[in-house]
Image 1 (cartoon, helix red, strand yellow):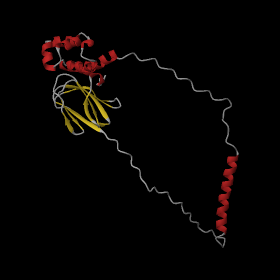
Image 2: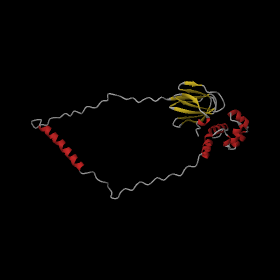
Image 3: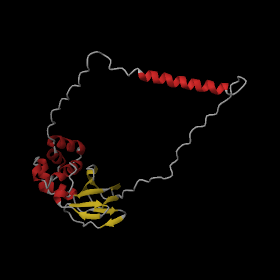
Image 4: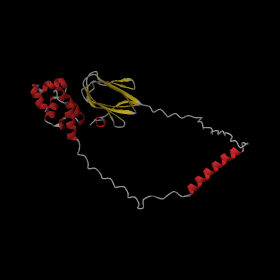
Length: 241
C-alpha cells in the first residue's frame, strides 16, 4: 500500500526522506514489510504513521493493522470451577430461640419503665419525660495525611519528534506520538516518569525548571523523579508498544 500510494503520486524515496527525515533504507524496509531492518520496535509505529500521513493514507488504520499483526495469539480462557453444591434440605439452621426470648424480655422491661414513670407523676396524669441524649465524643486531635512529594514534566516539540512517556505504574501518558514543532504535552505529575525520544528536538521542563536536551538526531532517554533528571541507557527506555 505504501509503495503503490507513492508511485501513484510520482514521488521518489529521496524526496520523502527530505520531507519526513526518515532514511531511505527505512522507507524501503516499510514498503517491503521488513520491520527487522528498522532501528527498533519503538520506531515502527512512529515511522509508519509519519510515512502514511505524508502519502495521504489512513495512518491510524495502518498502525492498528501492524499492531494486530505483531500481537501474540490470545490464550485459551481458563474455565472456572463450578460453585459448591448447597446441602440438601432447603433452609439452613435457624437462630437459637433464646434470642427471641431475650428480645421479648427487653421489650417488657422498657414498657414497665414507661408505666412506672407515668404513675410516679401523681394524679394519674402522664408527665412528659425528657430524654437527654448522651454527649457525642469529640476528637481533640486531628490527623493530617502526609503529603507525598511529586515530580512534574512538560514537553514542547521544537521539531518533528517521536515521544514515549510512561509513569511509575507503567501507564503510557504519551503513547508513542510524533509531535510537530510547537506541540506541547503536560505538565504531568506523579512519583516518576521514564521518557524515550526519537531525537533531541524537544524542550523539557521538570519541576518547573528547564532541562537542557542536546539537539541531536539520535534517540535519547531520561528518568524524571523527585530526585532530578538523569539519562537512561537504551535498554531501560520505554517503548510504548
